[in-house]
Length: 449
Image 1 (tube, rainbow, N blue to C red):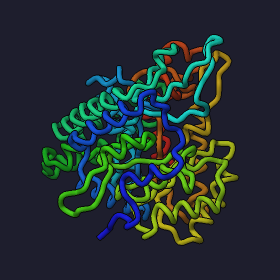
Image 2 (image 1 turned 45 degrees about the horizontal axis):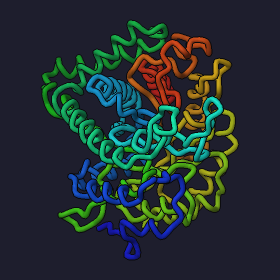
Image 3 (image 1 turned 180 degrees about the vertical axis):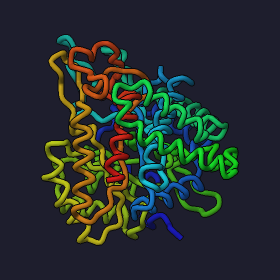
C-alpha cells in the first residue's frame, strides 16, 4: 500500500524556502483563517483521488488520455451556474471527440474549483505611474489597480474555499444528472460542426460518431445506463498557496494516509519547482497525483532529481510532466528531456501545455496567443514522442466556454484588432469554445494518423 514518507508532515514545507507566497499584512489573521479552513469539510475525497491516479497510470502506458482545461485563474465574479456549465460543456465535448478518435478513455479534468491564485514575476507592478502590489489571483487580492484592492486579504482564502465547494457541487450535479449524457454532448458537437466556419473539415468524424451511436441504439443497447448518461469529472489547480493546501490536507479514515483534499490533482509551476523548495517538500508527501510544469529553461539533472524526489517509488500515475516549451522551442527541448527520463527508467505521464510558451503581446497591447502556434506545438509534441518511442499522454489547455476574443486565429480568424471585442481575462488569454473544439478535432486527426 502507498504510504506518506516517514520524514514528512503536512506542515514540514514551512521549514523550506517558499516562493510566490503573498506578504499577508496580518500574519495572525492569516493563521486564524487557515484554522477555519482546516475545520471545513474536504472538497474531494481520498477514494476519488485513488481512482483518478489509477486512470492516469493507464494514460502513462497509452491506454487512456488526459484532457485538462479551464481558466488561467478563476475569477470569483465568474462563479456562476452559466459560466461553470459552459466550461464543463466544452471539456465534455472535447472529450467525446478525443475518446472516439483515440479509441481509449479520456480523463476529464478541469482547472476548476480552486485555480484562484497565480504566480508573478515581481512582487509589484507599475500601473499609470503608480507602483502597487501585483495581482496574485482572487484568492489573494483584487485585480482592481489600487493600493487597497491589491492588499492581500486572508478572508479571500475562506471565500475561495466556499466558491470552490459551490463549483464542485454544481459540477457533480451536472455530470451525474444527465447533462453529460453522451447523446446530448454529441448533439452539441453536431451543432458546432453545422455552425463553425471550418465545420466541413470536421463533418466526417462527427458523422462517424453519429453512426456509432446509431448502431448502439439499433442493437438495443440501453442509452440510459450510467456509462452513457453520466461522466467522471475531476478537478486540479496549481498548489501555489501552501497554507491553504496544508489546511485542506486530511488523513483518510480508511487508510490513515494523507491526501490534499483541495483537488484530485495538483501541480507545481515552473517557477516553484526548486529541489529544496517548500512546494516540492509539500507535494512529495501527499498521495495525490502530482503534475510538474517544465519550461525551456530547465536543467536536465535537476529535473531527474525532482522526478526521483516526487516519485521515489516510481509509481505509475503519480507524476505528470507538463511540458510548456512553445512551438518554436519544443523540437529542441523535448527530445533530450524524453531521453533523459527514459534512461532513468522513470514512470511518468507526459502532457503538453501549448499555451504558456506561445504568449505574445499584440500591437493593441493585449496579451494573446495564436491558435496555429498552439496547434503546431501539439503536433510537434505528438511527433517527437512517436519518434522517441514514448507516450504522448495528455494535453493541458487554458480555455473557457465563453465566446471571448483572447487568442488570435481559429475558424473565425480572430485578428489582433479583434481582441478588444470581448477580451475578459484578468490573467492569461484563453481559447474560446469554438477554438477549443477546433483543437479537439485537430488533435483527433493527429491521434488517428
